[in-house]
Image (cartoon, rainbow, N blue to C red):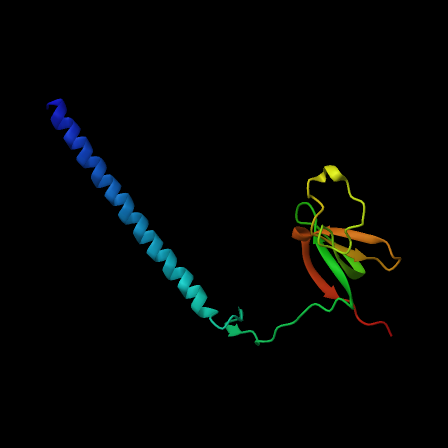
Length: 141
């Protein structure tokens, strides 16, 4: 087989392979679009579903006048609960807590941390990505 014929055969094989990859990619994208549209249509009204039923369409806001237990994720599968905290705000340039001294070499590491107050008035700072959930504290009697 001549070199020219071998080169033509190789080019033809690569073109067929490229077409197969393109066709396979297009099919995969269509399947992915179908899955996404199915998920979106099941929550079209914006409400999530629990046990096959739509959750009541009521939205709630966090009442920052109340006190909360804050559960944070620690290393591994452990968590820690901080009890009876009042949420004050967050750290950063746009924050009312901006006057809290933080190391200038942190390069923004301490920006957007949640700031909460313990019952003895000490403050606790939480990285937002470590907060698992908030639990309202029962009103004191």
